[in-house]
Length: 214
Ligand code: SAH
Image 1 (cartoon, rainbow, N blue to C red):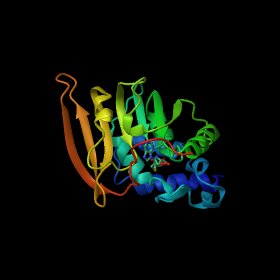
Image 2 (cartoon, rainbow, N blue to C red; image 1 turned 135 degrees about the vertical axis):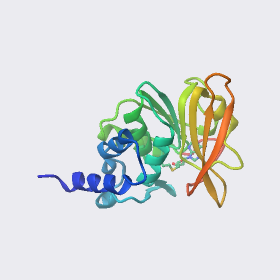
Image 3 (cartoon, protein in one colour; image 1 turned 180 degrees about the vertical axis):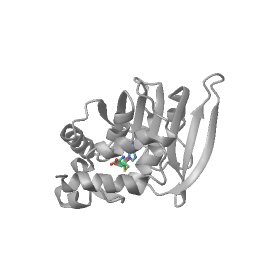
Image 4 (cartoon, rainbow, N blue to C red; image 1 turned 60 degrees about the horizontal axis):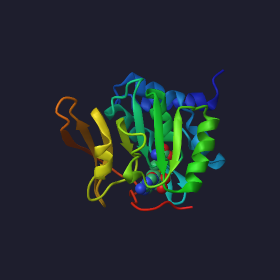
């Protein structure tokens, strides 16, 4: 017999399917146990298609938005990925299912430590957690084939992140203050030039530039 959690994940996939065409992304969402990334009290709602609180006024993103951003990044199994705004670690875990390795940066040390425990609980081994200001990227691990930004940049995507995109690389980020839009940035493989496309409206917590927090 299927457990309630398995049924919840299957229901969630059926809800996402009309909006998400990439079966690899749907499979990643189906196989990452979202209940491992939320508190015990929220576990019954782990597979609802909603954002949930994770402490420090932050939230674990809505599965639909995680899936959409993963689809836009067109990840390949060999890709090296930077994820800005670890939060619970859930989004990083989904990206890690689709790529070779994920470096994820969080400014709240306490959230990063909890995320490390969540990732262990979920059996995810190809994620490196870093505490610091993700708006500066990670020059030591750059360039990245894909960059996922899970907090809203304003007034623009931090230039350091765009600089750390490999030729052919893709970056997705919410941009804006009160009204935000998803923006997809691509670096042309031949010319190295960047193109930016504005997509649908979204709602994320702000990307806060500057030092780390305990
Ligand atoms: N991806 C997360 C949810 C992200 S919420 C998940 O799957 O659970 C946004 C996160 O970005 C918050 O945890 C916030 O603390 C973090 N954040 C905001 N500004 C940041 C910065 N400059 N560098 C790193 N993390 C940042």
